[in-house]
Image (cartoon, rainbow, N blue to C red; front, side, top):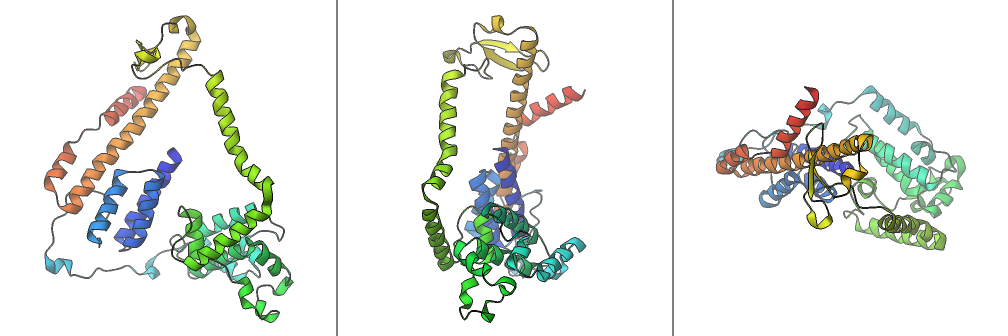
Length: 360
């Protein structure tokens, strides 16, 4: 899917920046997430580099210019210069947002929701704020503390029993020690960072086993309380999908064309679109069924499908070629680098040709 591919590329960008900043663990997490979303040669190569070398980056990952030259022992022993977080810039809006969080009086105000806000509204608010205040995104002073406050607020309010207890204390609910000896009542079951990873990292976090187990037990109890109706609501989209798919199989005819020669399926007659001269294949009855405007509309669809396939294939060709460059660069393989330079990208060439003809 296009969305998964874009998100995978974003994860790779974050990973390469982490490698440049000597953060291989963070880079590995995002590369593994990228592979789950949309496997690419680039992410595969970088994971291999990290696994084999332990990897301490000495180059900028934003481009690929040539194979990496092997360095002497004295160069390898040279310590890396690390940029300080204090040098990272931030905007006035980010600083004002941090101050707003610090001035909040309760968890509801931190998340920007009403006291009767439902679970889905809490989730939406948390997602938005967590991305906005994450230390990797917001470098304003106090952003880390604000991020933790947001995570703690959601962790408590998303727990039905903790939220009920929290709501009992009115204006003083942020200070449980004033009215209850049990300070653990409002302790979240999961750390802010682990909560963030659970939402955006592709599953439950692994760094805090005890917190994860408590969170999973709580989730299990709440699911049991929801009863059969909630289960039906969860299963209903799957049932609808199955029914629609079955109806499609029964009611929808075979496509009128194929972009590939498939005589066994009835697509044996070759045609060319009038505009871009794109080849496509049809059955014996095609000429009787498609004439005039219907034919023009169908050929427009043929050309759109053809160009879409070219874009996908071009992207894959570039990924494969870039993967060769990565291997050549980080393993010092000159022969592989030369092969990468000579590697052809026919889909990209054809796509450029079509683009030029459309704008010509």
